[in-house]
Image (tube, rainbow, N blue to C red):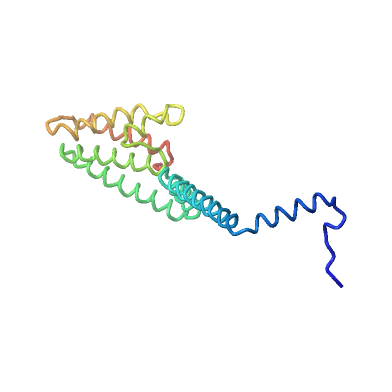
Length: 188
């Protein structure tokens, strides 16, 4: 029994056009042209796929998501960060307790650095602490003005070796950082 023609019920003119187009598309020159077009579309698609991946990588979206999700699943890591901050804060307090100018100047610089590390861990972006602090307003952190004042003093200490600061002023600067750490739930 011969195979049945699925197009048997169609218009004969349609059948002739279909046969002609089928013969045309099966010619070697057309097959070669189709193969070249497929290759070009594949190459262009591959090019855009690679550039898309590159842009996502350069924009940091992958790293942001990876750090976000790794932070979600590692609460032990978070507590260690807080422990690390508490340990560093204790060192700062010990420097202040010496009441020597060189030590309390260094305590201010360390407190500023510690607060900057905390801002980075909180995903504040920027090239330096000024850029990160400028993203915070008093509605988010009521002690932000004190941190700004303290950061300015830290900059003076870091850039001017002859900058003098009294112990009372140094205590006030450290208290500004302490208030900010307490407000953020790091210190009690």
